Length: 453
Image (cartoon, rainbow, N blue to C red; front, side, top):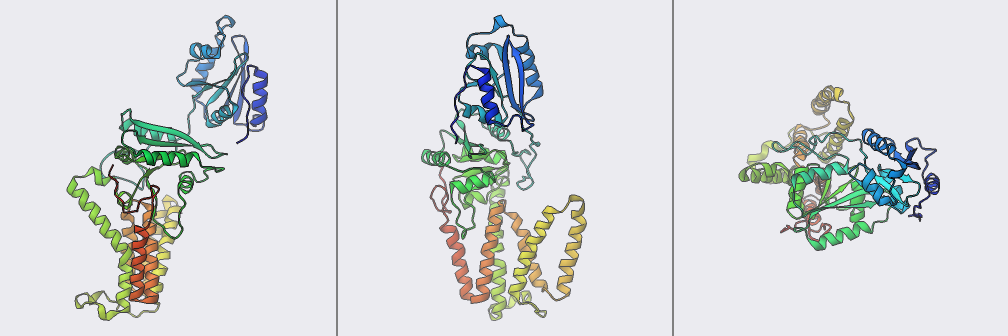
């Protein structure tokens, strides 16, 4: 960080230094507004688009009515008697002043007063707090996090009206100075984990959080490329974040990111979703069991099918009907791998298809890629059925990263089974079990560790 000097009582010196550091003349959105307040020269600095026009109009209107006799001797007295706004602070260091101006607050310099008045009448462009598309619940609240961190913390504060709820604001990134809020219940959080986390965040030395939350996660814990299982739980629902806070967990919010990062976590936390809390106990347990069984099947269904097709003598008589009867023009392993890639291609195409075209293109894709790929001999119908189940079952997982981690486990199982037959399948199962059991989270605990908070 560059070394900045302190503000003085001279308006000319202060404004000259601001113009030297900030591109006031070159950048149209950084505005300097000069005016007279109580017979003294004054200057406002603010970012156009971040300031509430109505609030600033009222503040300026009230200040223009101040006479020279009304001007107090100290800046503190002026702040108390003549700035009719809620959030007002006086700063001396230009490092804090520049950070506040670029964050959207309004800076006021008055000749004769040492320091700078910071008026927090900013507003950020934001969308409505609608329910997130990926993390929906059949019952419960219909609001969701947005890209503005203050709105997100307010959504959690609305649910937890407890003085023990602490939201500590920090800044990360030399260039961006991105706001990071660490939220926790003071009387329930693990103090050692909290201390370790705050120390890690304060020690981050990075130019910018380019990808916001993901960049922060990479800084907190280096990801091992060979283990795809997620280290954190993410949610876009404020009710889920509030429940985790009450359980003694820590919630991290990053400005410009519409989701919360929750820790400590385990695989049991990651597979949970909001519906588990909103339904009766029996229904919630059933949903968890069914989701776990489906996740198990998405990993092992196609590798097991391939194993039995390579060893048809192992197939019981009652299940002989599932065997491939038609001519196999393309080896089964290549059919499965091509379909794995094709499903991801269709998913990416659906994400980038305009809404008005999504329905007709989905029909065309279903007819052409489904019916005609089988009739032309590229794929067998049994393989298409198995992959159709796997592709749909992947969406039962509320965590997107976990879904892809299971996909990678399935791919390595398929490849090892095709190369080494039953020995490859056993080896692949050991890899899956090892990837889960030896995966460490930020706390240093195993992925299977159950928190007792």
